[in-house]
Image 1 (tube, one colour):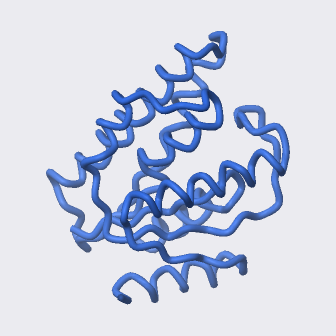
Image 2: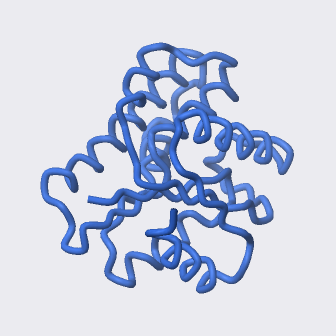
Amino acid sequence: MKKFVLAGGPCSGKTTIINELEKKGFDVVKEVAREVLEKRRHLEVIEEEVIIRQKLIARKQIEQEEIFEKNPPLLDILFSDRCAIDGLAYLEHSLKHIPKEIMNLIEPRKYTKIFFLEQLPFQKDGLRIEKNEQEAKKIHDRLLFFYKLSGHEIIHVPIMPINERVSFILKNLDSR
């Protein structure tokens, strides 16, 4: 099965694109971070809580991917809104270090390609940890760093209308 990740910083259009791909009949793994953050938003965000959140997000993400690995999609293609690698940038942003136990969760994951989306204008939504455009850009840049570090092939997706972004991604599924 070919596994593709839609990645990029906050407000880059990942969820919008994943929804469009799903409408086109592709199997998708939706973003899991929002669900975890929503359930734990009442807890004080101290270092221990940041680590717990990222562990939960990584495990839930991997669990969702494994469902498709055990029962491959009909088209043998899976798109994922983010992946566990994203947690590295968010941990570094919040704590300035990355616990080894989280690195161990992430290291064995392999993807066919990473479609890295350029950022759109920042919008605060109540769950985001980023306070402004500058913080969002910093996370965006660190995400790119960690994806490059992971050794995955990265395809940069420029800003353009949603239908053009989806077409761009679909045209680049098999390019090398």
